[in-house]
Length: 491
Ligand SMILES: [Cu+2]
Figure 1: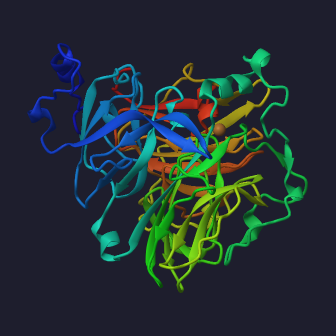
Figure 2: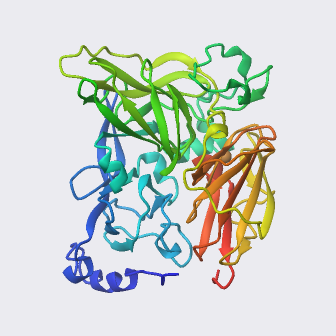
Figure 3: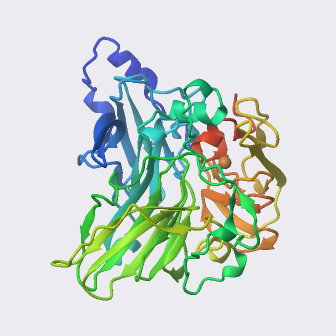
């Protein structure tokens, strides 16, 4: 594998004498500059100071041409420490943007160079330092490939967020009960648990087998730990949504990123039909439909062929709620109607789509060298979440050797769903609730509550220290994270 790559020590020395970003040019030849900073965002008429990640073209994040390396200089202008993770990418572990002792956060006013060969598809980046992700230290990371460009489709990125005017520390304190004195009398939490049979408005999913959905009976489950002030689509709400100009009969590639910290959605194309062609950046055999679930941190690539002219809302409907966000596709001269921020209630996000996905490039068949069952546990009271009964950072790493095939059977003993994310590797989903599938290759998979089971397989081909965690930020912050470590890598 490639050598750990870091110019941190060099940069630290170069910058020690100056607070100005007078970078030595040689260190950054050809590098794209990505600035982690702060900005003012107006959300429904009220302003908030949030973070942002701005690329060389002044737009959020990074977009790479086919074959281009991820040669990026990350400059920290946030005023605080930060560290940015390239979610779903497979860099050497020292460039993964996770705060290991060997790869600490960047101090304000410093920069760090990254240089690795990216994998193509829809990815994203987010702070892995504290809870900065909740304050929008997140952005798209789009890596183009020749095949997708040859399709000659209009590319539209839709990035989702959950937004609060409060601080993530306050939200977490409310959840853990550490802030009882200052908690409002009406706790802004949708802690029901919610009998799913009350949600009668099942979104119709053309061609989708509904039998796999965990909807029957009065099955209780916990949804939406936090009451958010707004849900954002490309930083805007439906009161003032982004309106994307499209051609009559236009052909679109919609790259959807769920960058929310604690929220899952149903993507609702309304009257349009789309085809899922990639999940978490990795191609899948196309599946047509108009409603698609997206768990935290997941991505969906949808191909949409517009039938005619008009205005076409693309909605993201919060699970277990009537709240929604989205953007509008509009042909020239079409009347764009304002949509409310609340609509019809949506059911819990589930694995009904996951069951039907098939990877275009599955793992080669071979027996596993390591088979492990991992228990996901936790509860609302006390608010703490665990992996095999352990709470980060007090965990024993799962030790791997390069060349091994690993299968992990994830079993969810809790009342909440957990979107589990593995750093540095793409895994294949090979069984759901005991039913074997030749499923998607991806980096984040939802494990349904109440004994939901998902089996994943991956090849140990990227030596290092790798985090494996729930991508619900508040679950991760209260313990739901562990480590996969290769033999020979020092702790
Ligand atoms: Cu979780």
